[in-house]
Amino acid sequence: MILSWFRNRRRRRILAEHFPADWQRLLERRLRHYRHLPLEQQRRLHQIVQVMVVEKEWAAASGLEITVEMKVTIAGEAAVMVSGHEPPYFFDRLHTLVIHPGTVRFSPHQAARNQNLPAGDFDGIAWHRGPVVLSWTRLRRELMGQSPGHNVVLHEFAHHLDGLCGEMDGAPPLGDVKREQQWYAVTESEFFRLVGNARRDEATLLDHYGASNRAEFFAVATECFFELPHELRERHRELYDTLADFYHQSPAEWLPRHETTANLQTDADGNYVHIDLRRRRRSDHAR
Image 1: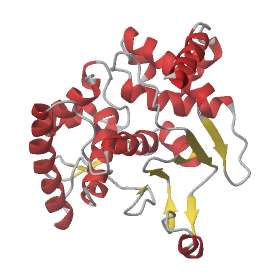
Image 2: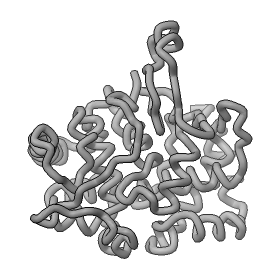
Image 3: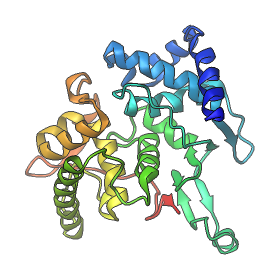
Image 4: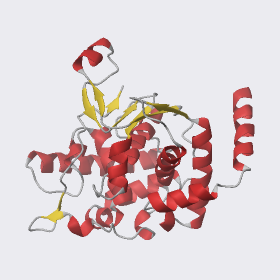
């Protein structure tokens, strides 16, 4: 109770400050979603960014120097996904973000010494009840439109949301039994559909990485929901509507179609073939 009082007082002080004009210009330049957001969602995004930049611990790895630009960009990407919620959600259970200059890499020796470290190369990792780790190089490539449909910040923050009510199992907090039943019915059907598509090596809109497990399915679906909302709504309407209910927003209503969608390869049926440039392994969420 006392800690909440101090936290709320600190936040009132943070939010009493005007949103910096250079931060706004940065978001307009860096985040495709930002300039298209409804004004009320932009207002909430500003509040979330202000709080996250100040409150979170921003840790650098491998000699990287953390800049305000990095903090605002990452906080802005994360804020987009929860900008439909009122009151604003500040990711209160996330305390630390670790930013790597390039690929996040843990050797077999490191993993053997620490059971919480997954061995391999990653673009990001979200620890259950722990930090979110991101590759700045990967994020920069995605911001430049080099991987349409992919967004490492959305992916890893979706894992964080997934773990708020227990294990990372593809079922984030939903609030009531009816919504949980709807979520289970739709996501189970879509998950097994993607598993079958991946097994047969068929072209899909949703990245085959989502067939790894239900947690990855939710994270991949979240990326697609925000990055390719028109295509997801057209091809997976029930999944789109279920995610829109959870995130309290409908990006297809305000975000133009991705400028580079036409550059994606398609098969004879018009299905998008995603060439996945990420080097994620099976567990980019960790216990």
